Image (tube, rainbow, N blue to C red; front, side):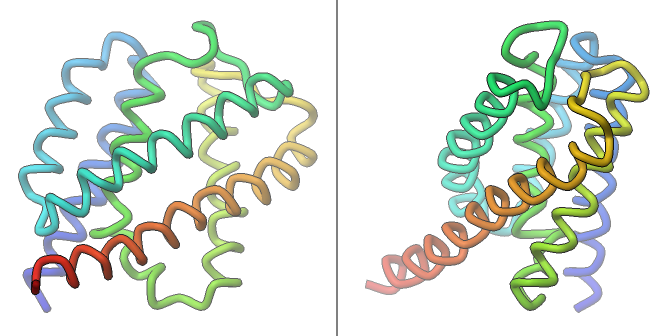
Length: 173
């Protein structure tokens, strides 16, 4: 249990490093962020699962973010969004099976609530530092974007759960 906890803490700290690098350095952080993502993958206990998660998770999340940019909830200095934002999503997805695995044991409604509260907070913090802009007013962004983001992220988690079961079945054939 202690090794798993240590892995979760390291994974969480690596993601936080990516978040702060992206927030403060934006495009200048690309190389350090890539190195951290590679380290996250190297430390992964479920590399095949995480690679699969990156593939469909990026398609879903970036499609969602593109839609949010198009409808005017988000804007970046680079259209539709910069590379650092894509890499930030890679790092976030790589937390699902490690430091955010507790969400798998959390009731669905609580997982939805946690995402709806904390995801918009992260975007609003990024906006306060000028990394992006959020629209319309903050409380509307928090409610609408938070709910939509929570649905999207928990959909990715649901696919991850089913794909994990499939990978376990296919490994035992």
